[in-house]
Length: 105
Image (cartoon, rainbow, N blue to C red; front, side, top):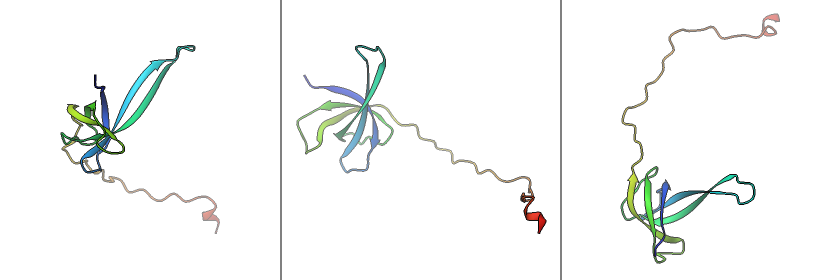
């Protein structure tokens, strides 16, 4: 059975492949503390996923030295803001503050 994981695309700068971060959490056997672990996988990008997308990846035969997974589907696309940010303008001109030592001259 092939291993299937869900993770977030953190880099899509390579041609034909992306880097996916998969987070897992488990309980420490003795101290019962929740431990989080993030693993990064190089994945063959067959569906053109972009940075920030949540994708499902599946284990395959090695495509290269580091690529052992391929993307199956995009679970959730990244949030893209379409509105440009509004620039704040100064409404009141203030005098620059001077230190008391500067006035002694």
